[in-house]
Image 1 (cartoon, rainbow, N blue to C red):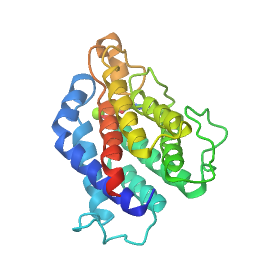
Image 2 (image 1 turned 180 degrees about the horizontal axis):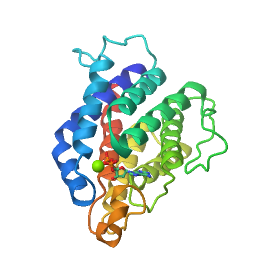
Image 3 (image 1 turned 180 degrees about the vertical axis):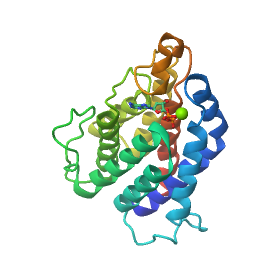
Image 4 (image 1 turned 90 degrees about the vertical axis):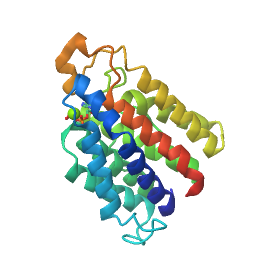
Length: 234
Ligand code: ADP
Ligand code: MG
């Protein structure tokens, strides 16, 4: 991922999360503690400020950092500023994505059960993005000890990563591949509604968590959609 795409993506994430912050918080109020939108909004706004992405063209601030370093830095800011489960999980995901871009995937610890394995590839942007998303998903699954079906962000992210990997293997053009991945994330998020939560705060509700969209799956779908809408503008 080029540095300019990463910058554009992070700004788009901040804008989308800001726009949907009240909705995300409402979702979290139903089955959690009502802070998801507020937390993410503050975190991504800080990413934009600290990485100097608020300049006219997104340059400035950390202009010389390559894409992988920008992702790791964004992860550090999210980890340090977003409270709750999602701060730790998204922070870790961004750091893993950056590490995967930097070294071709070798940074994903072999001892972890990988949810999505994207083999190291000789090159190309599409495989790199698929590897980065796969590494992000693996990072969340390992830290959260969670899996698809637990009613978490993984219910949006795993279908997205699986779809992206399949598209890449099929030689699909990246723009189309990312649109399909974003569609898969949105379907995956919707599919959390009937689920009973097995991880995070919502799991304290037991059966009463069913009938509600998971806030983390909803925000994850926004972040994947942001990838699809920004890639060609990178
Ligand atoms: P908190 O629950 O600590 O207030 P947030 O409200 O910011 O944190 O985020 C809640 C979201 O985090 C949930 O909707 C869920 O998607 C995600 N989440 C919580 N625990 C886990 C976990 N162990 N693995 C994956 N995702 C999780
Ligand atoms: Mg919460």
